[in-house]
Picture 1: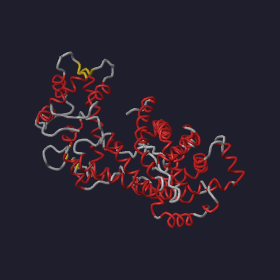
Picture 2: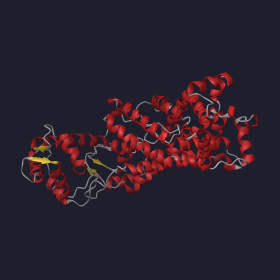
Picture 3: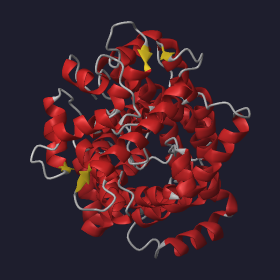
Length: 479
């Protein structure tokens, strides 16, 4: 973003507001001013120094981005023609954006036009928030942004448009906390057309695989506590680990992780495809997707993906709870369940799982949207890019809130999936289970195992973020 109070830049570019974008002269003056060592080229350092001297503060890497996108002959600097061309092309883009924002064609953008444009991109902001965004560009204090102000604000700022603002706030796939009910990722039109989306999905799947493997022991303890912990048989975190290591050695802490990692790929793919289809179905032709439609499409996509891979979920639970030597891998597990309990066993616990998607997705999205809007209204004075920590923080908090709400349903699901391994007395319907848990252990019985569940959130998010970034660089999709 840009600092305020910079008469020098206004003066250079506009020369008391009668600056003609087609005159070479003003560009030439600007170029000479920036080219401090007079070698006929403006390099990154000169551009950075020059812009800073003019009182333009902007994101790290912006100067680099300007030079590399304008530097056609790749000599590491912009000569006058390249410089001229960059500004002209950039200005063309800016003019198009300006025109598309100026809904009533009066040559100025006001707060309601900003608000409307952001709504079309699926972001709801209040009138006050729109005004804050406006003030960051408004130089003469009219609460209207005319073309000159718009151009000055963005000329050396590589963020072209409001789409970028929205893109920063994508509720990102980076967060794999091992709960498969998260809302799918949004991709921009250009990512869909350029095919960059599958690389992002691949990077996300890889990140999920590594982070799930890293936090698998906590996940296994959680499942144990969900199924076996009760008032008479308290399993503590340490006690659970000790029991497992005693029973099967350190390697047994990773039981059930294989299938947990395997199910990421089909699930991500189905969820993404389904999400795109549901969004089309739910949104009338030509309209933009609203938050509630995004929620519905996300929940339906989650349900579709879960339905298709649900047997893998059941096998994961069984393998996780398995004793040493009980199953020789996935296929053996599948064969044994089929032989002993028939096909129906593969859909045990399906109902609480489906019901659990709704509170999880709804609360996750709602909390994320409120955190996002709170951040935008408070800090988005000069840039919309919240920085990665803010994004990860918002995503982590929102999915944690979602988990809190849907946790009892997850617990019921796990219990039902595990039924063959329980005593006959514990087998029952969903409502029977709830009654039993409440009667025997009280309300908090529904939250057994939540401690390891929350303990794994931060390491899972951190691992998956780091791996995701490395994968993105490796696949060549770094922004």
